[in-house]
Image (cartoon, rainbow, N blue to C red; front, side, top):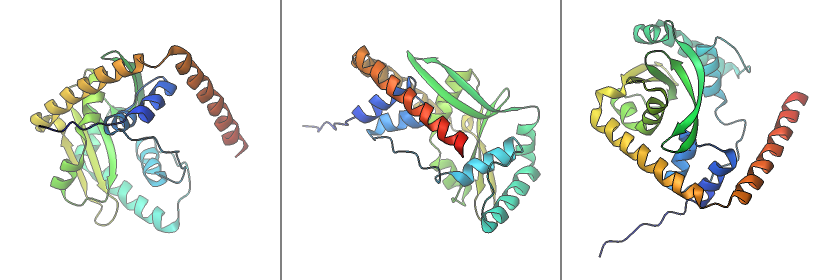
Length: 224
């Protein structure tokens, strides 16, 4: 008799209900039954800075001397890459979307928006093949569903020498993309049903608490 795996999605479900929307990252938490971790500002500083400097030509924070050296070389490689240059041409960057997909409000940020979509990833994976295999097509499926676009490019940049740039279109892997689109629909339909099970009073209380937390976070940022 086959065993049925039980996944407790309660923590992820309440996190999504409290925010009032699902994102790619929270969908992954929901799928795997993982609880959200309290965000530490130290996490992802380098990746965030790379996005800001390359996409918007803005410096947010000053990095360590060693990190600045890596950053300089990575930016040089990205700007010199012919395909990346073409993808950036005439594109909008850091674009937000928020809309209902399969009955669930979803929110996301698109790195590069044109008649296609593109997402920038810094990585420790040196092999193009391994990089492609490591990418979760669920993100691509979600963003394509949100925008109605057909092409989604992942732009990978190696964090260490030789700072290799790897670009691919998810459409070149139709079987994986199709599976991701099916999974996206399945997850959102299931999520919609689960969200309806949470009493409205509880949802409103969670959102009120989250709003109070946001106000405190905003005040703390202004003080800094």
